[in-house]
Length: 424
Image (cartoon, rainbow, N blue to C red; front, side, top):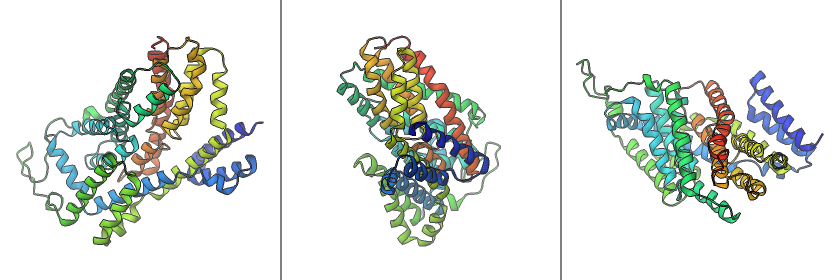
């Protein structure tokens, strides 16, 4: 049996054990990375550690730390009430507002995880307050960020269009952008309906100090409606996070943790409480799984699977399988990295003219990004880590099932819509 097949079988075993024995999958994945890396691939410990996602670790810790502070001092409660007033109290509009904000941020140049890091904590705090499904709210944020993610001036769009130019393939920036936007918009609409969005209040709901529709006055909520010094400082920190990430291209994780530390210096009680609320089991899970995926990448397992598909000899079937590989691998790894590997793999049969390049590239791009709601991807991990007042194990399973549905359902749909007609 080849080393690549052994590494895939070990991954399957990790999933089975984690599911049946309730052991943290991250811890199992670290053990698998050690066993496969040392015994099968003959990697050194340093080689194995090279796959540890240090940047994602800091993002998860930093963002959850900062927003735990915001929850501890009541800033998120204040923001939730402000959001309600902004849309006239119509709760049903809020998921779509979050979709639009996330999409606008990525469309103008924010990296998708940065947009999700900014929007998801507030969106999920709102969901907890008004009994909205966290899966619905998290999906709206992630799909919004992916919907805008392939605009001609976006990070994803620039990278994919750059690869297309480098490989001397025909491309269409607008088709790429609109394909991603339409697919994510349709998925968001379906999720909105399935997860109870139509049952959310469409008429104004009472906010702090306002009169209810039945005529009964609601007592002012001073604790939630008043801006204290701590809340003002936290709001300034959140604005600084947005500016730092979008205007100065600073790392979202390092910026978040630095701002959280600064706030903790002035309000140490809030800081101590916030550190305890960082979702450490989630951090262990995500970092462990991605470390093992890093071992798979270094072993050549991903390239092994991609090359096996490209050698099939039936262009349409190979195109579908490449879309599936992009979706499966991207659910556990970098979407951009996968696109950078898959598009060149598709070049040989694209050059034959049997497959339209524009449609194929759009299908690959959408397949590799629409699955980012998976809890093992950066976006999904941020949603999982920032959801307050949830059964985290249950929410993890929901995200994993939802991500699996995206992996299974989206590639054949975009393949039928974009590849089979021969666009390009």
